[in-house]
Amino acid sequence: MNELQIGILILVVVVVLAVLAYNKWEEHKHRKTAERMFNTNDADKDADVLLRRPVRTAGAGGTGNAGSERREPGLNPEPVAESAKDAGTHFAGGGTPDEAACQPPPNDAAPLDELWAGIDAIATLDLVEAASAGEILTSWLEAPPRLQKLMRWVGLNENQGEWETLSLAREGRYRRLKAGLQLTDRQGPVGAGEFSRFAEIVRQVAKEHMAVATLPDRGQALEQAQQLEHFCYDADIQIGVNLVSRSTVFPGTKIRALAESAGMTLNADGMYIRRDDDAAILFYLQNASGEAFTAENLKTMGASGLVFLLDVPVTPRGQYVFKQMINLAKRFADTLDGVLVDDRRQPLSDVQLAQISQNYVVKPQARMDAAGLTAGGALAVRLFS
Image (cartoon, rainbow, N blue to C red; front, side, top):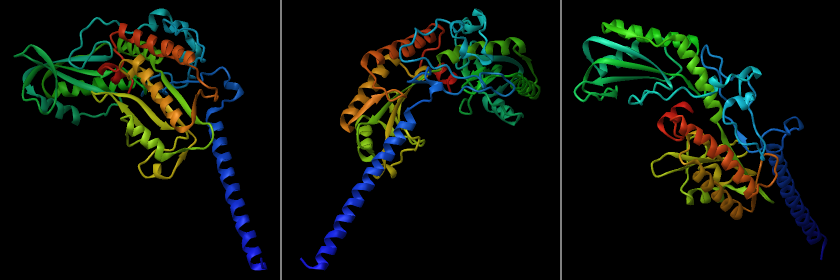
């Protein structure tokens, strides 16, 4: 073997070693990334390792829970409190409200088309002369100021004796109207300023159509908004199940194949979504790093971890959906050589998952049902949006 051949051989060995070293470094980097994602600080050692709460902030002029720390029970939790009185850390200011304030507003009124006295502050307008839906809606849209909370209009169909949501497609004319302001959502409860703007809009529409307007009591509406916010905060739970690799990163191509074979679709936010036959969202699959999935980057990317996410109050039949999500997560784990872990990278057992299902899916959804807010129903979707 001459010197040239020896030199070439040495060069080949150096290149191979460099490639192996680079691969090892990449694997180490991804593993460290996963550890950073799923490990918690000592200060958070008592924090929940599986549950997340959407950030509920204060509405315009409201107080809400904007500054409060989220309550995150552990994997072996006590049963969820039957009332928010037993879980005072849910509330802003660190205090525990009295028992009456922890209950949902009384379900003493049947749904009025898409308005409900339990979650909407409702104003009534009696018109001297009937007006079309288009005329009413145009007056509303032209009436400043704008609102942050959802506002809806319904009119009484006198021929049928039923209330119906106003839309430009409706041809009827109405002499009796109701306007509803949603009292809370995930941005927090209605505040005094928002209620005042709602009242101003109603008065302006009433003036334009020579109507007599009857507004809800301001103090009662604001108190009801706070009560509803307390109830919603107690039920506002998201469950995230983490899947991490035992060895190398998960190839994006395999993630896509598994997700699509399970009937999941990629949305504009870069998450896969599983829906039921009625198009209702059941659960999500997202990249644990926060990087959005796209049809393009899935061809080349590798993920250090995945998160299966269930939004409890807006998921119909939550107990069965949770089981379906876990079964799919286990299928991913088997195919990708991964393991289901909590946020501290501790493996999740079937016993632990059953506890989570019972305490943080079954019980909260049962309390919602008792309050007339079926999880995944139209009213629940409105409140937890």
